[in-house]
Length: 444
Image (spheres, rainbow, N blue to C red):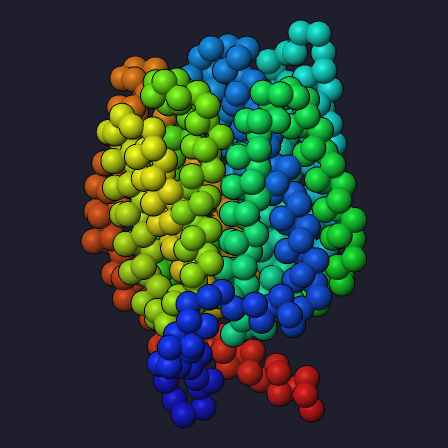
């Protein structure tokens, strides 16, 4: 670093009270940005409703088909729309007002929840609409998520981005815990239609909140969405081996150790069908525990290594969870896995948000979407297919071991990721300079 480089964030105080404050999440983005507050609350409402549907769909498929493979096939149905529309959504996020894109897709997702509700209200609910809606939800999510991610660096100061990531994670985990925990009760006592109905309400409330966001127009030099623009983003990602490392590590971890699609069968295998909601919530509990104590993350600078270590922990915890026969111990290690996943997400997002130019942010967010979404979709297919051949628990523990092996091998081939240090990385330093210059210009 040169004398003109903006310094990295200062370390926390060594005093006891300073250490406690450093451990707790930083609320600065919430206090400083009205738009961040609106997005945070809207996201909390939506993620609660989505968590209900996340459990309702596989449970309904299980009831209608009794097949683990049929449940896991949802991941295959969602895969192609996610890939195609995720990449195109990234290009759209760089070429149009991100607020408008978010609003239109939010409305579309609400309509799809209405279709799930109507299908469930039929005297004999049909199977095919569940797959069709799953594919359409995947397509709209692919269009929306890059814009949701790309808008954050515009509404939050550069030095507050890690704190914003942690706060967004807390929001997601709260909904992911409350949603699954209540879903079992709601479905058992009120029926699937109430789960879908509450999801519809959540989208309506979220849309009203998001409508109040300030416009977020494309940069003046932005091109129209095109294959050339998508390829430009892909070339940039390929030139950044540290970015490629974050994508491939997460995809490998999710491909081999993401067994959530077979949780209904795992609960039955453990003779604990009552624990299904807890299984879905356990990972979120572990993630929330990490998020609520995320202040330590600002003192860690080797972000790439933390991504790798966390992915190894995820796989190991899943392997242990699949091996155990006690439901409470299974829940414990699912929570440990969730905590590891949160650590990985914190540092992957920090690398992305602090090093990628705004003009490419949407397209790279589309690629990021694929990295953290395609893996889980394929992982559901793997888990369901393997469970049908070897048994449910074997699918879980073998997948965990495969995750550890694949991540370990990838880490050996990714020296750029392992060496990444946000204090000295050329891209992070350049972004800090640009933000500092922008702040000076705005103050003048």
